[in-house]
Amino acid sequence: MATMTKRAVIADRTLRTDAWWLPQLATALGLLLFVGYSTWRAFAGTDYYAPPYVSPFYSPCLAAHCVPMRGGADWAVFGDWWRLSPALLVLIFPLGFRLTCYYYRKAYYRAFWSSPPACAVAEPHARYTGESRFPLVLQNLHRYFFYLAVPVAGILSYDAVLGFRDGAGRWGHAGLGTLVLLVNVLLIWAYTLSCHSCRHIVGGRLKHFSRHPVRHRAWQLVGRLNARHMQLAWCSLFSVGLADLYVYLVASGAFADPRFF
Image 1 (cartoon, helix red, strand yellow):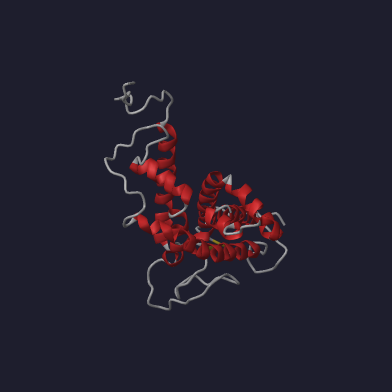
Image 2: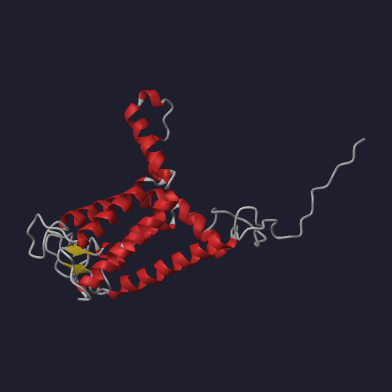
């Protein structure tokens, strides 16, 4: 009778010889950079409107003490009682969408919690409960944050269109800020539509694609975006930060917005 062979005992944490920790380090630094910058800007409450540009961190402006915006999404639904930065009222929606995103989960689980550190690298934690307990069970809210992220992207699209005006509100003009806001909103839409929840909404729960040709075509298009979800997540993350930084620099008087026509 053949003897049972035991599983090989490998004492090393990993047999990988490459610098597997570099992507995790770069991810941690990138996320910390954005979190630090966005926290500062979110609590600042100033220099977020430089006609006709409005920072994506502050749109729509929902507090009564918002800077008056000519034609912008300025809805004082929270009245006078909210005295903190207006950005704190709206950033919760895109923040929740990104925080629960499937890609970002992988990114910060690995970068900050080493769960796992990388492929084929032993996890240092003794137990694994997945996302079945609080607070990680809240990750299941991702699909609902998607529903909230879509109208926010729509409002930012409106802001980008308003960028084709001059400071006096006349149409038919454009500056460098117009291009910055336009590129940013295109990347935000690409990231939002590449979401796994969006792919499921468009083509999920269909038994016969042949009976739904329009949804099948849309599912294919979203699937192509979904294949680039990681790249779009990073590009849109930094584009929204750069868009805010640009508006801040113009609004604070650091430089004048170059006008093309």
